[in-house]
Amino acid sequence: MAVDNSSHWLAGAKPLALLPGWERCIIVDVRVIARKTLNLFVENRVDQKFRKIVKAQLDAWYAEAEKATWKNPAEIKQQYRSASIVSPERVVFNIKGNDYRLVVAISYPYQVLLVIWLGTHREYDKIDVRKVEYDKRRYADPSD
Image (cartoon, rainbow, N blue to C red; front, side):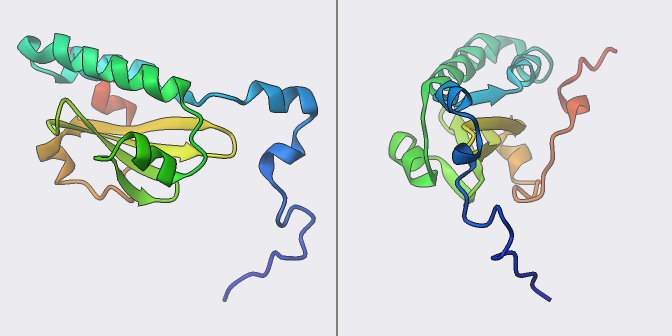
């Protein structure tokens, strides 16, 4: 049974409108959460001979994402034509051609992007991209 929230006091409110004016000024560029995940992935899951190039590709993606002001999935597709829009809040980016896939969740109103999953294309083919969740053990040093 569907719940009707149309009479709720927040129904239809724009999230930024709920913030005080000074906080609205803060939210300009996308805030990327889990840069450490990107670095741990390179250190612990990428073959030594490919680390430098994969790190450079992830750093370039991070720098672009951090400066972005995406308002919707269409704006991401405009910048990254090869990105896959899985749902309004979940996007898959190709890294290093199509060798690696980066799954993120994004809140457009709050300009926050969360790294959910990163792996090879072969690994990506084995996950359900709509349901995969962040697992910090995946990026941990295997010798720990």
